[in-house]
Length: 202
Image (cartoon, rainbow, N blue to C red; front, side, top):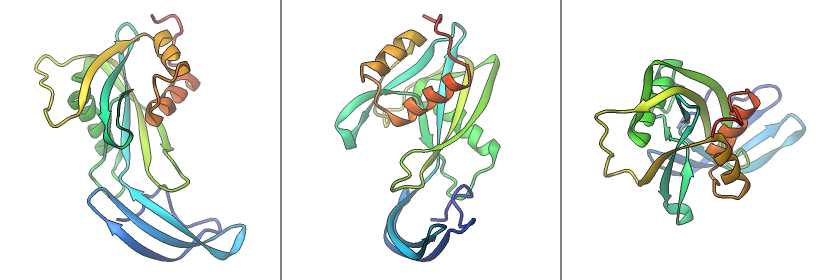
């Protein structure tokens, strides 16, 4: 699995060698031996390479945010999240590919699509857990969205519910630890920082 263009040796970083321990279609586990800008002696670090993802914040005409409730096997719980999904192109995809995946996940996971006057706004990217993985996600705000007329939920998905929440309700859910998904929390911070969240939206 090749590294993303977002993760490259430069500015004093140098990969001396890599030992692969495990690889599948979704991730790769390596021990990288890396010289850093501040440490001339190489360090050994276990790294998980993982496909990039998209995270979509679907906003309705009345400025509510659509969340899905999904079963997550690793944590043995069902949690509220924004729609998200991996990008199958393991090399760095172009912007059109990334946007296509975002719209696809919006439809497949939430059953929503952009309204005729809708827009998909790119909000940058983030690293989910840079202490052990180079996994990163691309943020998108989709607004306004509306339910797909012909939507049928895929039986293979582990999605139990899908609802539109007011901004104040989501602030409460975050404060009370009802929302614990890193993708969703990070997206919420980005939306707030960019001024897309109106505290008046109920």
